[in-house]
Image 1 (cartoon, rainbow, N blue to C red):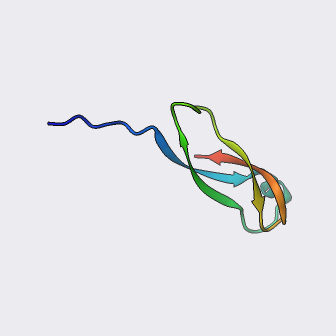
Image 2 (cartoon, helix red, strand yellow):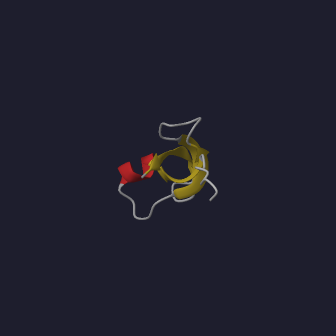
Length: 62
């Protein structure tokens, strides 16, 4: 029987941090992948928020 290979790539959801603070309805989320081996901590990227119409910080959520 062959061994199962543990995949290093993991799908994560990024959510806007500024949008939560404003209290406006809706949310800005992106789906991406990350390498668990190289980046074990939470991912944080600057992405475009179409609701606020500007580039904001998006942080990884569970």
